[in-house]
Image (cartoon, rainbow, N blue to C red; front, side, top):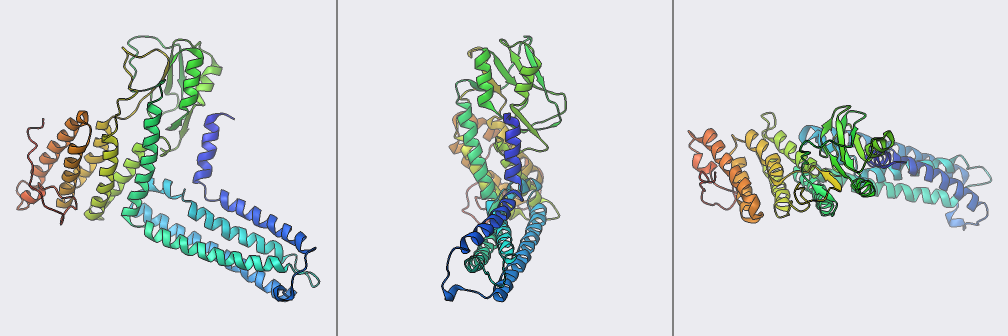
Length: 435
């Protein structure tokens, strides 16, 4: 089985809500049959024995209770989906589906139901699975406790700041992976300019979709084996139409359908972006949450300020990292390896600040918190990144002048405030000379 298919299966299982509950159901039914076989040769003391009528009633009650609780969990899940989609971002749901607590709860409930049902059908006038009945009762108690943990967890996760912290965690893990990959001696980050040179092999997409991930290690091995340069023409997260060029190979490879098929299997396409190898997708989710909070229908600038707290942390992580490591340059790199397009510091900064500045231009909180974030970055990011931050501050000054130029609050809108409004006050800065 090729890498692309394995990736698709893993992604499907990770996003699925039924795979783990199905495993729980099968395990519960199997354990019920095993328990019956064991109890036929085990003697149970009188205080742990049940009459056949009592055992049947207890098991029936457990089956009914777990079925009802499973339905209630599904109802709560549906309500959470509706609320999260309306209050946060539809892109966030891709992460919410992956939460293990929900899957574990459903697996425990369905497994308990299957275990109790498999025991109930074996209860007879001359045989009662006494130990199994007690275990089923214990599993019901465990199910209730897990449900309480689940409910507490998701009530807390409905807060915007909790969503922001969760998404930031995904960003940090995937950005660190991207940096590690960029430091591979045969993986280069950047845009390859062929300079009129003809490629020896071109790979085209067989379907339309977003690039979700690439098997960089296999691409490197393929390039090393044939002493050639493999160039990806689209970055991870890009949507490519059917028939679009995915990969060009320069040198060392002869055109063949088998080679094209093998290279195509190292690029996973899907219906939408995922966060696996696309840390910018996490920023996109956070910006969408802030944009929704700033819409006239919601008008919740404090939520946008809380999101900016975590967006500032993502930019701080990017801005203190040397993104030039492994950057492709035609004049000083060997013609062997893999070239992958990647985002620059400017790309991350623009993605974070541009839309929030645009949609929040009428809110003093947003202008003040955005200024505080940019001024903090100006002090902390690498020297080569500061020009982009200064340019963003100039744009912020222009936005404030346009939105608040005739307002009595113009002076307040130009002050940096880490809390939007109510934080420690600092003096307004003039960045008009930054250009």
